Image (cartoon, rainbow, N blue to C red; front, side, top):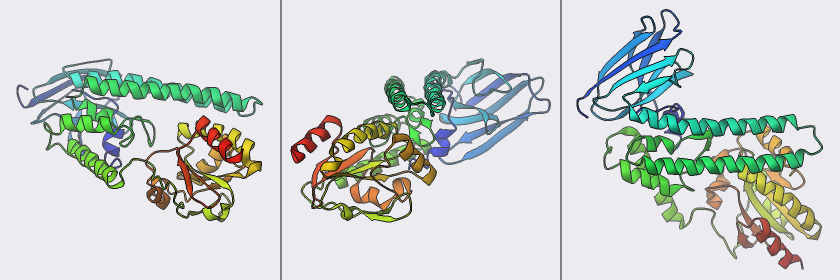
Length: 386
């Protein structure tokens, strides 16, 4: 269901926010390309519907349309230069923008929703820029003998930035709960596939927005899609009694047979006789990177005593997987993956909804504990190997 909303919310970078059904949009574009058309399209959950197209005159343009309910529209030159608006019946909107940056108008009036989303998007883009800068610093230090220390510092900063935008997004939703802009905020991304909020982890906010918008916009496609998504997640949670993962406490963990980096199948059962941490991760998840750094120290301390790690990646490409292993220096233990992302059968077998996640199993493959990390894991291993 998140994928269905992908197109709709990926293109939403700027949102605009009733007396009559008529909408009037007037605009002026600085430094326009002669003969250039400007397009108006309606945004649905999984497609764009062309509405109108006009040729600018000395940079001026106007659109007029009838609208029964608030809806999202795209004002665009092309697929990389556009402004997304939340239009409401009766609005008269005035826009001024540069020809090469339609998405950041120099001024806009008559559409509160647009101004609200510009406010949010400014913070989101600031966060993305900060994280991009950290990536640049990482690349600059690839040959440095202090790379590991630099990575720890960068990760700490990244986690702070991600925490800030997560908190800001929730505050923004709370402040604009009755507006459709809250729906958009649910699906913003820091990077492709890396959402600020997650349907399972932040389910309370998805429920909150659904409960606020569905009674008012029950016939609007994106709101209906959200309602269906929330219903499915709740039903799934109810069926499994918990979010992630299944406990299996005291039970023998299910068999896992996945290829390692060379393509050789490695069975989880091949580790019998050792205390094993079955760890789920992905190279693209910052929390997994932090977990890996802690695991390196734990592994080095207890491996000679009979401790092993069987790590399952939810990456989509071998290149990303291998790069993540090398970056985090975790090639010293068992690494396996079918590169199927969240579609891997092991995700369903273990009911994994969030990563990192892990199981600590004994020498017979029975589950001793679930989701141990940091000091908790060290204390448990100390008890076992004392």
